[in-house]
Structure formats: C-alpha cells, structure tokens
View 1 (cartoon, one colour):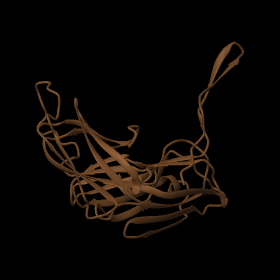
View 2 (spheres, helix red, strand yellow; view 1 turned 180 degrees about the horizontal axis):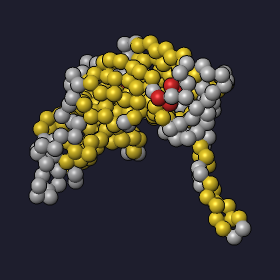
View 3 (cartoon, one colour; view 1 turned 30 degrees about the horizontal axis):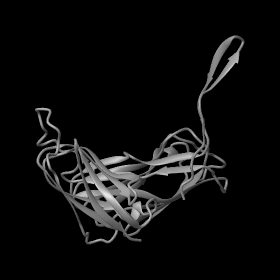
View 4 (spheres, rainbow, N blue to C red; view 1 turned 90 degrees about the vertical axis):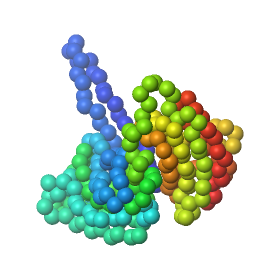
Length: 271
C-alpha cells in the first residue's frame, strides 16, 4: 500500500532583524526505482537501484517485494547498497527470487544504529528480453525502526523501454514539419493477458505519447510516452496488471498524440 509522505517546506524565521533559513524537514521515507526510466535492447543487461530520495525518517531495516514482467525482463543478480553497509558491517540481508518478483529483507545489526537517506538500499540487474515497454513496481515496501513501523512511506516504480522505441533518432525531420504524418495506430491481443499490445507505423520520427480516456471523455492517465520515436514500425506493450491498481476495469479510449496528429482507438480493460 502506498502512503503519501508529508512535507514541511523551508521555514523562514525573523530573528534580531535578520532572516534565518532552516533546512527542509521531510517526514517518512520516499523510495523509488532509479533511474526512473531505463533504455535497453533485447539481450542487454541493465541495473536499477532502490534509492532513498531524500533526508527523512530514520530506520534500521526494510522489507519489500518488487514485481516485473518475466516475458520482458529476466532477473540476473542483486547486491546490497551502500546506505546500510557503509555505517554497519553487520547486516541481515536475504533475498528470494520468483518468476516475476524479487523479495528483499534487510536489517542493520549494530546496536541501535539507524540510517536515513539519500542513498542506495539495493541494486538489481536484469536482462531485457523483447521489444516493448514494461515496468518495475513495488508490490509493497515497509521500513522499521527498533521493530516498529516507520509511517508515511511513499514509493515510485520505474519504466523500461526495450528495443527501437528506446530513443532512436533515425528518421528525424530536419525541415520543421510536424512529426508523424498520418501514423497507423492499431491495438492487438497480447499472448499474455496482462499486457496490452499496440502497433505504430510512422512515416517520420518525433515525440509521441499515448493517453487513456474514460467513456465520458475524461483524461485518466498518460500510459506511455517517448521523447523521440524513430520512423518505421513499432510494437509497444503496456503492463495492464500494474496499471490495474490505478485504473478500474471498463471501456476506455487510447489516444495517440504525435506532433499535431491525434488518433483514438477503443479498448476494454478487464480484471
């Protein structure tokens, strides 16, 4: 369960006719997958970090399960990060790998020692398997201090772009024309029921995004984007299993926005 973190911003005090600036104080723990967007190619390995983003609440242990799509990513290895090992050479650190998940339990065993961010908790290496887009998400993550839960935890997963959709710049227009003249945009069934497949055929390259709208025309979420997508044919896969935590089943419309061009396709999301 994701908990929203509380922020206390910069505080300004007027003392003896002068201004005193206090450093920001952040309650709770903010953790994310870094980099938040990874670009790779099939059969290429890459590493992401479980990263504490800011100075926040102190803790001496954490437990988490990370989820990933085994059709898109293969787990390779994991190692401890420096946030917990640098101050204490004695830690309890175990991990178990499943077909689509990675379980980590990590505790400092140095007599009341606690740590806070920023820094790396653990680093995980994956191998990209096939063209598409997928996500690495937190099934859950909890932090502890002296056996008690640390409140106000926020977490953010990461996206992985694999193959020709990952920022290739071939075919970029050089004369200022709007990108994507009459792109072809279709939706097709995926071999995995958890993934939504889309095909794009582009005459030229440029920025593109795909936005989800509900049946009343209200914008729900931007489900995919690329700062630049090269000319040619592309197949894009979105992990609807991860999206389903935020988007209820029902009838929706996917809108391709490319330059000045928009194309819309109807889609039904099922549980």
